[in-house]
Amino acid sequence: MSKLLTFHIHEAGDNTQMSPAYFMDGEYDKVSVRIYAERAPVRNATIDIYDDGVSIFSNSTPTMYNVSSGADETDASNTLAILPKGYNSEEMAEDFTPDTIEEESWITCKLIDGAGGRNFTVQLELSQVSEDESGDD
Image 1 (tube, rainbow, N blue to C red):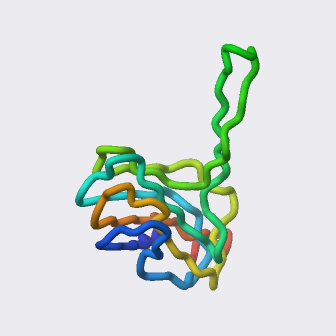
Image 2 (tube, rainbow, N blue to C red):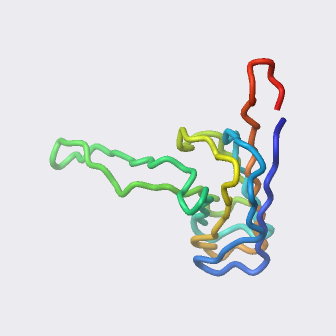
């Protein structure tokens, strides 16, 4: 069985908690995240989703080749979902931590930087982990 958690914030402020918070009734795997903004951001908007206060996104540390030094350099790690500049929607289905969301966890969402966007909706799609071999939940 799948579950869709929806978070919303009308007026975007930085580091603002989106409503509501969810108390999980079972164990779930993360499937995808969808972000929508009625007014597109003027730079990349960033959002994070937390499972008991810990980001559900894995650290993705970009590396780039520095022509001057001839070496790969790493940038700061990123544990955020991004709605790109000028876009109204984005869907992502990777970059999650491998951990499942446990029963009785609290799932929350925070708009880290609204970047001039407005009326944000974030959806987290989950798939329930089977309780037994027969596939019953």
